[in-house]
Length: 340
Image 1 (spheres, helix red, strand yellow):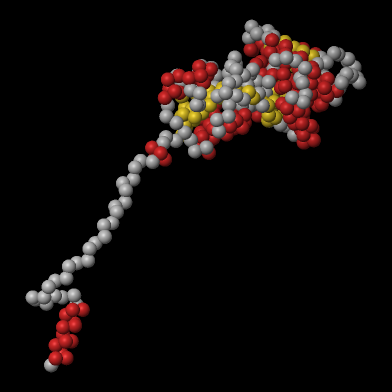
Image 2: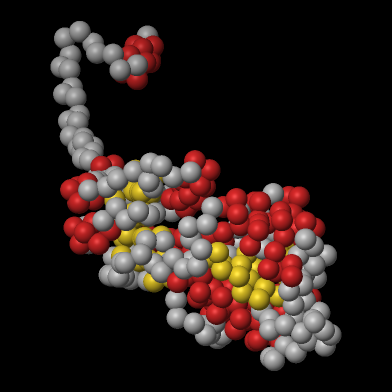
């Protein structure tokens, strides 16, 4: 009977029960646990992501505006930046805009020199805006405009290469830039062929240079091209400012091969040798990482590219030679021999 009582007592104790009348043991003290601190706002949570702004005029051609917006948007995305497009920008805006890091502006000048002075922490880039000077936070692309001298020099080189008897010509506008283009074209012509002596009559003094007055109506341009026909010109460079579709089509109808800045319509392709086209977009793509890194003060010329190449007129081997000359021109190894 005693053994049974002890067994029952042990079961009660193991079950954690208390026996009436017995003293209740005091509970073990609970160690205080420190609560986790309330998180405070971190710099990462409150910082504004960097911002790139493209400033373009409200009246810019829509296709060109879309192209620049697309290019700069992609660059900003790749750099982890926000992107905005503005038609104007003030000194107070660049001084107070949260996270502003890069501003790219196209002509007309939105006042880049003053904007750069007002916001030294921002890198500015002017594309094709004349009259500016590079500064610590102001970089420039094509301040003197497109490289007319290099473009015309290369056109003269190509024309001499493709005319068996060096019968080439150039049509320009009667302007300082047009005169510069004529001189550079002639220098490129002689760079390829030296004295460029014709082997067969009639013997003329090539290149033939035709100037069109600035006040001549565009519909009269084709009539001026008859001079090239009379002098049996085989290849002609048409200065971009006068390269109207009617003039180019007239040259095509007269079996004159054409070098220009851009081919306006595909029907010209049989007579179109190549386009020598200035393009500031690759320069923007090249310089953008430096702007993000805070490296300014650069001054870059607008590069030229060969497009609309007709392989039937400019073979692959000749194209490689032309590209080498273009590369040397843009690197400064070849001087067009004129002062823009």
